[in-house]
Image 1 (cartoon, rainbow, N blue to C red):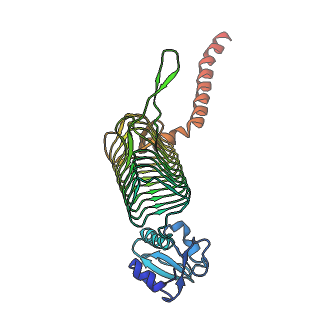
Image 2: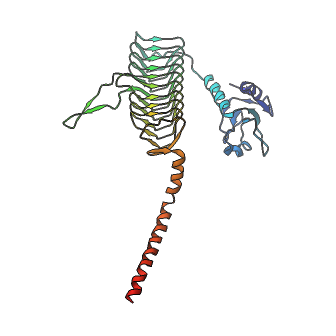
Image 3: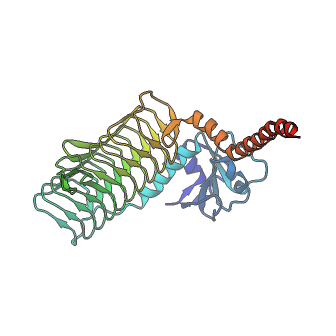
Length: 352
């Protein structure tokens, strides 16, 4: 796909500074550039690259003021980051494969596929599966019995969606996602062994959810594990059985959510966060990376940090003191020596 700077500006509701007819065919990083590419500047830390980039077109904000000459043609927009998302989506959609069904895929006779569905080689689609129109299922995916997929779902290679789970419209499941594996449930016995608890529930993923590579979401013991509309899960996340992840909540990589925990709407959970089971997290909660949530959060729109997590600002103030502890210890030890010397001085005078 080749677009001129003029066409890009029209597509993004922007304005052009420079050659409006210069053509670009792919995006590039601002540090690397390259003739015939478009790059962008959204973070001020990268401004110096704006003056050295070899990209043909540079996407900048309306309020960007160049301090040095810029060789690239500028396309000015209101919001650079959202414009980049729109542009990358256009480039990505241009490369979509035709909706074909591989002869090397196994599709059970009772499965139903909507219009314009693509199925890659060595994919298995079991009995009773319902796949909506426009879905793209890549190679070596597994769709278990009774699974329901909405429309325009993208299933990347190696994804496993186990029996009776439901995926909504416009969802994206990245490579090796596992939906509907058994939860971690075992009953301790008197002899010290454990009896496995059967998990007969399902996982329900609502519309517009994106799930990163190697993330696992356990099926409910009874009922459903929910990933609500618009949630975004990063790579390598573990969601326990009967958990409920709220609408438009974002969770970063390597986080773990224990079973039966309910996370509210529009929460932001940083990387490597651990959350215990059977608690509720209020809407709008923000949790800093590597924090541990060990108790319910009842008030909305608060920030937390630490393990166990406390109010974010309190943690920052506490950490400022914590960093000074070695120096404070040395000062206290010095004061103790001085006090001891003063106490010993009268005894020495008396003995003399």
